[in-house]
Image (cartoon, rainbow, N blue to C red; front, side, top):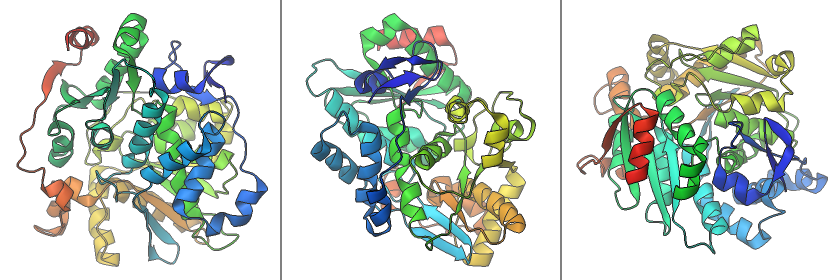
Length: 432
């Protein structure tokens, strides 16, 4: 299959270049030249398929022209070595738990698949691959885990100083070996800007063999579409859910739109954000106005200029009314988020993290107007990753910390410190 930049649809490039280059020179984002709906045979059997079987068919739609079937099947099976259970809170109220992987966040799906795909694409090369990633919390931990001690790779993770939770920071800064963390004196948007500036420096990108593990990379999005199929097949025949997606950089929602292009029936999309409501504001007004991000309890959504918005525009033909008819946007502040954490615990005896709480608020608002449509809120992270917030609302000792998080508590952290300056960052890269 061929791929192209959202800014130049007529210029085709192969899979390897799209994945390893990550960001086109024109600062657009790569998209498949064609998205073919899944065949009738798939839909005849999909409800009886395993999670891995569904994932294989979805991945084959995007990569099957370029990757041998047995190799692709192994990639998917190794990616989906953990479940994504659908938890029912009320008759039409569901949470899809995406935090049962190695780093307890939904980013494990994309990071694990990406690591395997990149290893296969570079299997005959002797050059080291440098993976750059900006994180607002969970992406960095998932990428660090997926690439840790993978031969021929080094990973450089940029995170905003003081804006990730203590346990999230431990996941970035304690692995060592081929994983390097850089604490940036700024916001996630600054981290993302620094990463993009490195890719747009053609000489630096070529010399260091740079690739990205952020959702600007298409190989992060495809595996995130797997679980939309996985959860939809658990709905009764003929019932199409509304998906509620806690959103920051909008990769997760974009992955859902790709699933819909493959033929998945979805009643509606709800983009749930915190005070960083650039996309909900666009959906209401038709004006896209990026702005500096604001720090909130739901830190993974603290994004003021979401990268994947350009892919969303592309998928809707830059047609605001059509996008607004398919996607609703809602935003909630920290006080509402705290109240939702307490309310979900009180009503259902269920602990929901700050991002899921924002999603639950948006789902409740949707159901008030559409009571017959079930909502599936994407539970993007384990509540233990936000221990201070959760215990402040639910009480000391209320959250059980999984061992794979608890074991990080006393490990020493190692991180470099840089200003949010593009020149300084590129100089650091040159001498790292």
